Length: 211
Image (cartoon, rainbow, N blue to C red; front, side, top):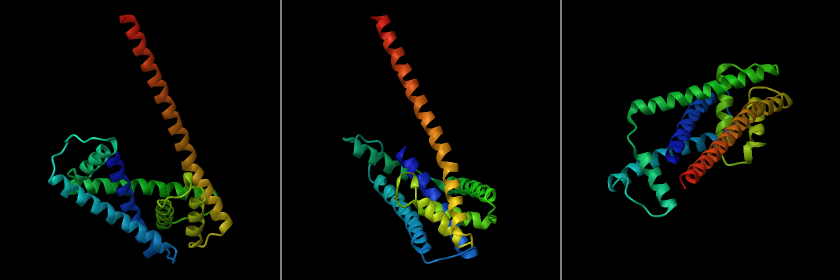
């Protein structure tokens, strides 16, 4: 599971770096964007190095061998997942799906901006998507509160949007994805807890009946 998450986030990172590169060439640029671009590119390179290491490591050791300790087992499974054959077709599919997901995010940004009277061109929306989401990849406050808004104001500022309008956009956009995902995630966790409790209760009743 951890290996799948790493690969998923790696695909997102690569897609966002591509979008940021397009934005820097066709939309706007600034000195404060350099660390974001460098950090994103470094992340992609680090993931590539991790995959190369995992393949070299597993090629010399037996897969699925028994390992003592939870941490060692998790690390072993992570390395084996990263070393699994990908193929150009599957890798291309991952990147295409990640790009499609961020294009949908950018469409949401366009709609939120339009509700506030701000017009974003398609490439501008992709640029904002890349800046805001690569920027919050750096560890920050829970829910990215504050960091997300600053990135929204700064990126829209490069497009000539006033700070007060940009802040309204960032807050509304943040709420548009944070509130629904938090509510749905909470409901999913609650449902899982209820089902687990019912399963445990049913198992206990069955054992009592057999007794």
